[in-house]
Amino acid sequence: MINVTFRPKLTVKSLEGMFNGKLGSIDTFKNATLFGRITDLVDQVHPEDEPDSGSRATWLNLYLPVREQDQIFTYKLMVDQSKDGSIYCIQIDYGHNLIFDVIEGSQKIDRRLFDIPRDTATLLPNIKEGGVNALNVPYSQRKGTVKSKYVLDHIISLDERADIKLRYDRYVVNMGELHEVSLNQYIEVAAILVQIIRIPIR
Image (cartoon, rainbow, N blue to C red; front, side):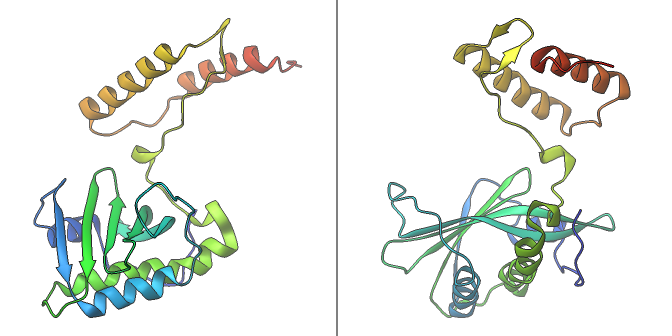
């Protein structure tokens, strides 16, 4: 669980408010100060090596702390920089994707945008010290990857994996939010795992 000594300024509602609720669209902000603060942020971490992405550099493992219902949640934040270094593309995944570009310029922008690189940078020491223990991803965003492991008596095929993922995505869309797991569901899953890895029960 996240343990920080600062209070993030942003909430999910304020994040959406900066983008006028245009989910899926890409806004462009032309502001030299914001561009510089994003540069300061990514200078503190190593970029991922993705030579086929069409970007000069990509940072995939940043997290934006956001206040929500008296808790601090951490949402994945990714940064792409163009090959010529003139454009940053920011993507914030909070269940929906907020995407925006930042370039140099003198445009007047919502001052809350400056909180994004600031709070992300402020959280970095916690992540470097505590790793994943410093993060608090909302339950509704937690999901695993379906792998070709034993499920009861057979190995699932690629088609079965795709079907499970499709049904999971439909469930999330229809339910809106995942519910907590009941004790009975937990015990059923534990029983399956015992069969799979053959743990001796004493």
